[in-house]
Length: 117
Image 1: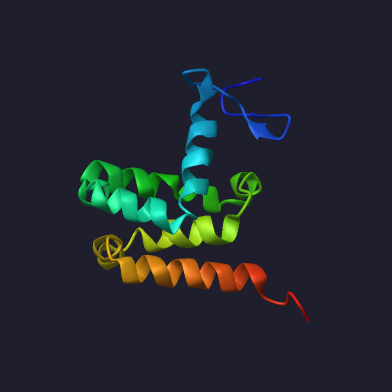
Image 2: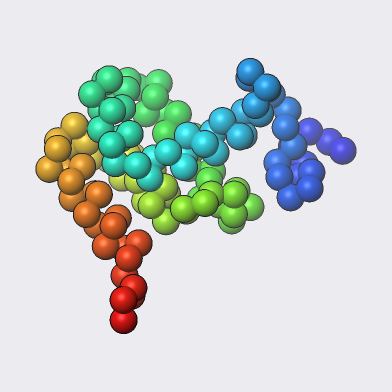
């Protein structure tokens, strides 16, 4: 099998870091973006101001492709946040408790829509 081909439905593990493939680490990171408190943490630690980190966020857009999206547990929130993180104003506002509260509330409302009917 050539490098980059899919093995068992999952991209072939080529690079490993501490026993995990690069893909698995990137998948875990993209999934963590659905957590508003983690976004606020990244902002507080100034990651969202780092040009290398911003380029990394842009690189992770490959998760929008269906062949990679299928591995995300919560593709909607994770990919929406990844999209928002491409915007400079959102990265600046991510430190705001009000924005985090809004993201938590809207996420909860979306997750519970239609329950109890």
